[in-house]
Length: 140
Image (tube, rainbow, N blue to C red; front, top):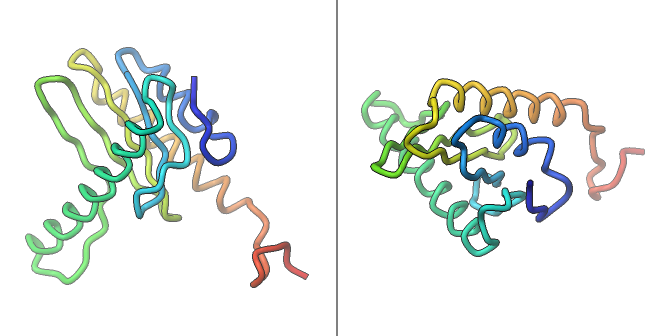
């Protein structure tokens, strides 16, 4: 089940929860604002996860660029392995991000496949959305 912060995000996060041993997931903006989260998290926990996830992504982009001796790098995914399980962070092309957490029994390949599939669906939906006018409304 998914908590709804801004709009209905269940279609993005609920399929991720279907992967065995996935505990929680968050949908967030690139700058760390929560747009949806699963029920295993409280709103304050989801907000903390989003803020940390945003910071981790920024650090990873900087590290990837430094190792490549480039000014910029885009991160395709971040995987954090701990003694409690795995965190998978996957940014989208349109400024949002999906972060999911699975316990130590989760199959990381299945989790990664599902998260990337949902990120692709997010991209399809963003591309299908009607363009907005300069005032934020529908174009004239």
